[in-house]
Length: 372
Image (tube, rainbow, N blue to C red):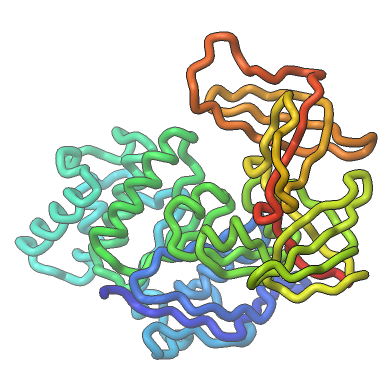
């Protein structure tokens, strides 16, 4: 496996009174596509700059393959950075932009030509070698920046929101291209983004950050299906999130079947492997796509099905799906998503003000955290 392990231990960084990072520790595995995900100001770019060598932490350690790199300048760390503004030289051709790191090292011209075209081919831009950056699209410019960062053959590629300047469709295309490039070269990618879908789409693992803290590290599936905190549950995709009191706990195989009392909703059943006790207050989440919606009452005798009645407050049709805001009580609205898998020439079958039934299995909900 190419690339380097990156280990961050107890890293903190302040700018005046602002604490950008608070005792952050992470282990990023060799060859991994690892994302730092969080809102603006959460510390993800500061952490990336510390890994790159552009910032010095107040305390803590950074290791590449077990070697402490904090004393090394950026050009000695075997890590290159791709920035969101491309940072290309406008007066140089695409060939010369990519060749620039090799010319600094005084690599022979023959080798420069071979390596530049190897990496231009990797990003599918060999036909544009003699153009200037102004003649390329935003996505093409970003691919030039990636080729230039890779030509030094770093062990770690650091990507600081590299797709944020692109429009939505191009961003999706470039994300696929970036994933392909990672698969081809196999080095460690550390990717900074505030976009949950980007991180979920390409990452082997994700660190969710908020206000200088790492709240959860896990695979996209773990982060989405088993959020560690209320913030993670809200930030990763859409969800319905409530506080509830535990009123009953019973054994259900290797799991516990817990009954919660949620104000304005009533009794909710949820399975969990974590120990909870009657009387505790917990956070409960149910994703909108896990909830079934119909105008007819479901026929079931299962004891682990949650069933509620409501009225469609607002339907939002998006072509491939409809999002429903369903009022189940005076002060509580549930978000529900229904995928359109079959052709319908008459539009959605459930409309505004319709009375509907909502249902989901106890296995589809999740207790996020115990609060008291």
